[in-house]
Amino acid sequence: MNTTLFVLCGIGLIAIGCLIPMLVMYGRLRRQVLDERGVDVDTARREAQRILGRAEDEGRARAEAYREREEALLEHKKLEVGASEERLMQRERTLEQRASNLAQREQMLLDREAGVSELRGELEEYAESARANLERISALDARAAREELVEQVRDEARREAMLLVRDSEMRAREEADRRARRILATAIERLSTEVVMESTVSAVPLPEEEMKGRIIGREGRNIRAFESVTGVNLVVDETPEMVVVSCFEPVRREIARITLEKLIMDGRIHPAAIEDMYAKAQAEVEQSARDAGEWALLDVGISRIHPELVTLLGRLKYRTSYGQNVLSHLVESAHIAGMLGAELGVDPVPIKRAAFLHDIGKAVSYQVEGAHALIGAEIARRFGEEAPVVHGIEAHHNDVEPRTLLAILVQAADTVSAARPGARRVELASHVRRLEKMEDLISEFDGVERVFAMQAGREVRVVVDPISVTDLEASDLVRRISRRLENDLRYPGQIEVTVIRELRVTDFAR
Image (cartoon, rainbow, N blue to C red; front, top):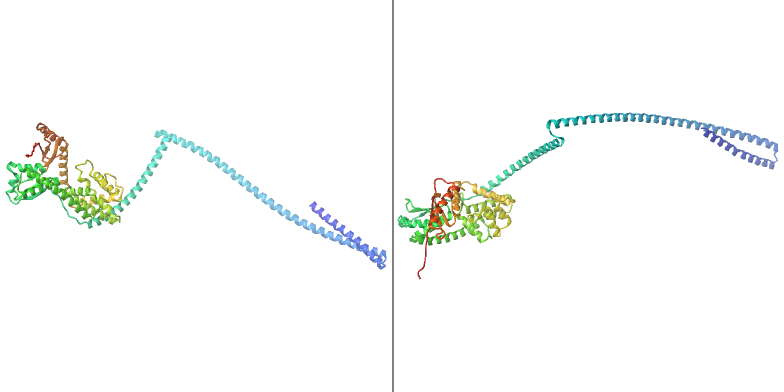
């Protein structure tokens, strides 16, 4: 405020200082003008004084006006400054109040934190006490309890996961079963095949009743020679003009039947003729087997197959499985597999090929040890079959885990063919397996050349090598065979074991 008054006084003095030189200059100019005009100096002085007085009055008036204006401005400034100071003070009071509130809140937070810390300490004490009590009660430490809890949680999670997996598997299995039933039903509806059951006997008609006596021979020599060479039972009973060839092995029975037919046609029946006709019948059966294999290939529609495989397939014409002809089963399985592949929209050619060859191992299963599926796969691999076909053969009985759709379809075709009504006869198959096992057990003895199970397994005839087995050893051999059958084979009734040691000496007169 003092500074403002000082500034105003300075401004007034400056204004007065500016007016005085102007007035002096004006007086001089006036005096000069008066002198030039001849005006009296005193008069001019008085005039000048009067003008100077008037100027002084005007200067003072202006200075007063300036001073009043400055005072008004100062007063206004004072009011504004006062208002600003009042606002600042109000803000300071507001800030002080807020600071006080913040301090109160901070104190409250500190108090609460202290309370929480105190409660946390108490809770920790309680938890420690509870843990100690639990450990004392359950006899478990904290680590063991934690592991047990983790194990419980893991078991619960595993159980929930297993439930989800089970539900998903059930839904997937239901859908798969539904689709599989539809596909199999469609394939079976399209299947048209004969219901063929193999028998264990073959009837041979006779041209006349007197032929029975010639077949029997003097003192039964011919019939004994026939049965010894062919390994079958020849039943000559009261049936008119007919004899029956009985044997569980179909190849052996077929050869015997053809041999007997040839002997009847030739009319000469004696041991040498029997052996000669038996050799011809064997060759004829081999040729018939090859023809059967080729006809089966034409029926299925498969080409480009190794000739050895054709021969092996043809041999299956004379083999049965549970009374079902194996070659017919292969043809039927191939057709079913092709229809299943067509229903699923995949290439049916390799599927039909694998299904057609899946039981090829049965053609040599009596010569090679092992499962027929693995034997058949090895044979197919050796004769150049592709890997998917080989896998379908080896996996059709789950000897190898099936990894392809082809293998699964081969399994399905095999099952459908075997399970259809009238396809198999379980009782006959189990009986045949028992007879085969009987022959295999006896074949393991040293010196045994051939074994024939006859009379439905009630009689076994064993042909031995006369060079390696003497008469005394033959007596011991028959006892050992009997004990082996009693220990390793289950059968009803009793089995007659006959060891045949026949020494033949042949020479030629030249």
